[in-house]
Amino acid sequence: MSSLPSQKRKLFTILCVCCMLVPLLYAVASALRASAPAPVERTVALMAPETLPVRPSAQPAETAKSAAPAQTRPSQVERVLFYRNTAMGDSYGKLAVSSLDALDRPVYSRDLDCDRVYFAAGHGVCLTSDRGVFTTYSAVLFDARLRAGRTLPLNGTPSRVRVSSSGRLASITVFLTGQSYAALNLSTQTTIVDLVRGEVLIPDLETLSVWRDGAVFRHPDFNFWGVTFARDENRFYATLWSQGTAYLIEGDLGKRTARVIHQGVECPSLSPDNTRVAYKKRFGSSANDWRIHLLELKTMTDRALGETRSVDDQMEWLDDEHILYAMSDAENGSSASTDLWQLSTSPEDRPRLFMRGAFSPAVAPAQQSVR
Image (cartoon, rainbow, N blue to C red; front, side, top):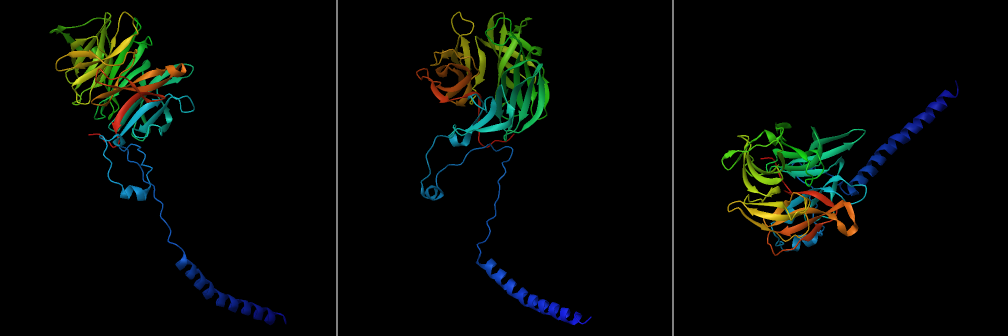
């Protein structure tokens, strides 16, 4: 019992010391906070679904402020390229997008491998093959951030795909039999899809009523492929193949009709101003030798462009005066890898290499939304 007062005195002394230290520690902490730099808030700008990934200029900020505005063409910086990557490596077959001013800095999709791809106004379509025990095919819809959405089953091998300029409609062509347009026994199915609703509008263009020279045109061997949409969306162009001849048809979606307007046109691609069609035309007697031609729709004047190699592709318009198309990487002897080539609509122009390791290009504005 005699030690209890002594213990109480020790506890009291410790308590007094603590009471003295608390104000001192608080003063020190306040001084440190006052002298420390203000914290910098870190923010992450999320890309809106209609905004495409365009890389900023690497120019230093202080230089950019003092530099005069650059005089450029209607800005390649404002446009991007969606495509299938065919450069050998881990990203082979991936859906990719690059700014036109930085083609060597692509952004790849983590999840989407595509056989064919197209994109417009916030809506894209990736045609895929799932090669399991039984190979299945699908069309995966995706947005501007390369995020996969709804999946639609396909009945055959992916061949062609196009999206209307508003992003609302897509055309998809698959091979039901055959693997090439050079084959005589090919059978295709071309479908028109509403991308906004994810619904099939026309399951097969063979259901259209086709007219030629003022009369109904019909034959059991009809095959359709290579749709390209006009700006008004109701009108489209496509190839109709029958009895060894390719025809260019102009279709009306609302009326479910089409009329033959020219002959010898395969895989048409309508120019941005909707006045011309770039297409591939069979050359000579070979079934798989095509040359790039240009058709003026107003006059139906047809002429060859300056590419002398065989091109089996549906062209993409880079702008009103230049087209893009894919060719096998012959330089490296690879049929799996393809390069994109650029060609002017001037007959005197010669093709120029545009991009290595790419296929199925789609040029789109960098900022685009569904109208």
